[in-house]
Amino acid sequence: MIEEKLIRAGISTIAGVDEAGRGACAGPLVVAATILKDPNSPTLTEVRDSKELTAQKREELFDLVISESISYAIIEISPTEIDSIGLHKSNLEGMRRAIHALKTEPQYILTDGYRIDGLNAPSLAVWKGDQVALTISAASILAKVHRDRIMDKLDEQYPGYGFATHKGYVTRSHEKSLSELGVSEVHRCSYANIAALINR
Image (cartoon, one colour):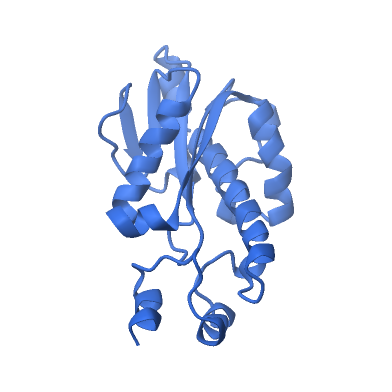
């Protein structure tokens, strides 16, 4: 675990950052950051990349991660902002906002995959970080659960699209509902499949 090396070097407040919803064509991009009290805590042994967990287990671990965090932050980037500045910039900006929103200033920051400029502490971009860094895995759980809850609410507001099922990702059922209902206010108009529907 990357955190163990940092802790041995005398770095105790380590922030992990990750996102959820990057590949979806509807709903927000959600970015979370967390500083765990003790990344070596035995209570966190089930924490791993959110994609490897069931929805029920993620829900259980969501509350655990929060209780085991010194500080955490969850940031939403709207479809409008994604369309305005692009997905990659939105992802980087979301990570910056999440880190700056932490009430405790980290000594070191671990990000999933991408290097972030303009941070208030040294950082390391970790390839597949949600699989090899516990703090990033914890952040991935916060981001994923928070976003799934948003998509469940959007399912009620925009019935027929199936947001509670596919969470805004491109699936056959989602494509079918788009062809029948058209593009909603929460779809990302800059995405190729959505833009094609708008311009046809």
